[in-house]
Image (cartoon, rainbow, N blue to C red; front, side, top):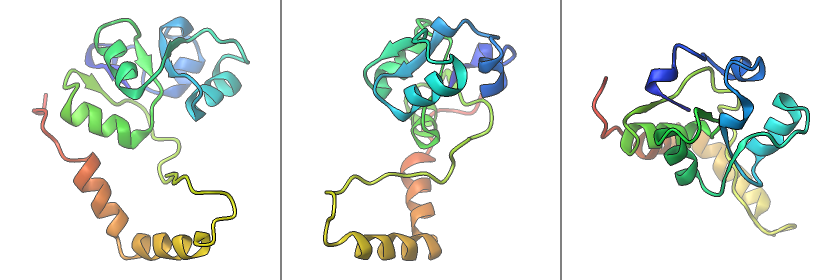
Length: 143
């Protein structure tokens, strides 16, 4: 996720890894899988990023110029750039497109039922319809 005017500077995660933006200008949600990814794949364990506590703060920090870019889930990025932060844009390829998480109790008795239901919804295209309805709906005008 980046502000529209920086799209010529970087085109994806590889440019961030290659240092085209100072690492302290990359917004990262604390205690997230994105923080783990950043530490493992980008900074070799150095916590040199711009830390935030929520996705909202992540987007607002890029929009206000406190950060130049951020790493965020693609569905969340679509929602924010299509509906709230019209001056932000998504760059690069989605590197975890089909990963969604549902938190359930460990050893929950309905785990298998939930797995079957989710698989069925996926095969019927219902999960994709929900993604389109909630994450790809667009309020922001096209540039």
